[in-house]
Amino acid sequence: MALRVITLRRARMLSPKVRELTFDPGEGFAFRPGQWVSLKFSQAGSDDPLARSYSIASAPRADGTIDVAVTRVDGGPASTLLHRMAVGETLEAADPMGFFTLPPRLDRPLLLVGTGTGVAPLRAMIESLDGAPDAPPVTLLFGVRHREDLLYGDEFAALAARDPRFRFEPTLSRPDPGWPGRSGYVQHHLPAMLSDAPEAEVYVCGLNAMVRDARKVLRDTLGLPRDRVHSERFD
Image 1: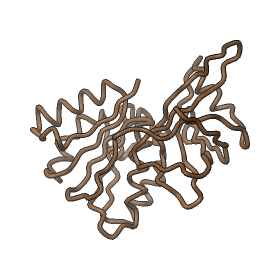
Image 2: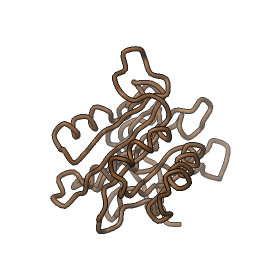
Image 3: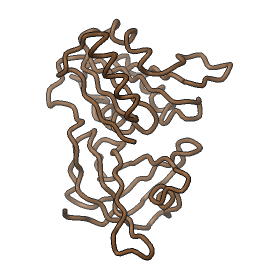
Image 4: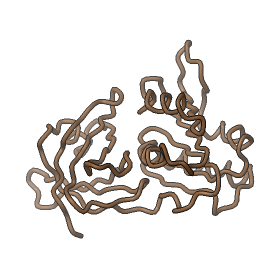
């Protein structure tokens, strides 16, 4: 597997535990929104590099940079390194991979369903459609525990305010008393989301348990054909 050196250009905290890192991967780094990239880390005392895969959280840009969103895991060697990484430092990365991508032609509305950092590839898809004259209606159903965990929440809300084709539906599993939006798990809201757009194509990304439960609701309860349900899972 060919590797390239990528350089950290910017970084910011998206939530108390999630850091966004913006890398410059150099020339010729072509990818499709929804794909992921494998990052390689040197380990002290070992000749074998540590590898971790992260979804690209941005659409292709003129300057070539990409975003990844990394949750800090207590004791996790890769997330610890990425949360400490300073602007200007470098890593090795493989070329993008994955098939969790939109088709070249979109004939149906889109329902994008994500939890936690599972929103990353969905953000890339949303960015790629922003401003496209032939973009279909898009609904993002995004679930997290607390309000402060809504990664890119302000960005999604602003897009929904200026583009009537985009609908943002956040839901909290542990809402605070003043929370005005949906509560509970994303899979519980799927019947309502599909009743508004029964012909939608659905993309689901998150931890394995959520993806499994969501697919069961979509296919067994709501009867969506297998070819209209697309998923990416990680644990």
